Image (cartoon, rainbow, N blue to C red; front, side, top):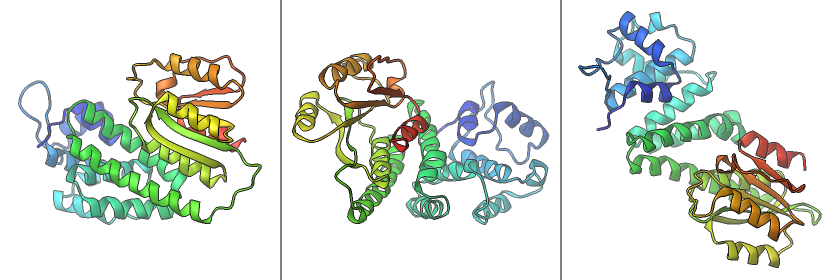
Length: 293
């Protein structure tokens, strides 16, 4: 059983703590009772109920109308919501499925959204914001590792399947850019890297995918032995023994003749004056970089 404070609830639902307090005061009967004392604490069941309220609210249902509903009616209404809803609803439903370790529900919703939105929009507007919320809960100790691994592995498997499908049906021209993708040593977050591998293949770029936690010597050997003209290095945590700036300096020096994209929040504070390099801290900048080529 997990315990969540009001800040956690705000992060997970996208509803400001101030608004939640007003709801608690005005419509107390629909909100779970908070623990005694100054700091509110909610358990898994409380969070599940609040997520359902949030889903209805983000779907345009007025809070005064939700206040007239029973807990059973609220749960039933979220299940039966139509597809013309917004991203916040999808994110909160994925959070709920993750906390319940509900694989069937998670995969069903993922499949429906993929069909409705397309994969690029799904990842940009739902999956990555969802992973950010789960990551924050994990850092604060409110999600156990099994829950984080549960959702990450489901998403990873979906990406691998999509990459395989594109690889089998795509025909490349010899003139197209060839990109090598990897994360530096001690960086193990793979989903963003897999997403860019998928996106690049969709854009008909040839890719060499090296994966996570790559040794510099191995990377250098691969680049020297292949006709790579672009490097994508992705970094999230920046917990590396080598600083992000040192990584930039190293690859700028070794591969000054190649295009290098230093991507991800781990490189936000790094700088590069080399003409063929680009430092992109956000997903949109990274996507636009390749769409222009």
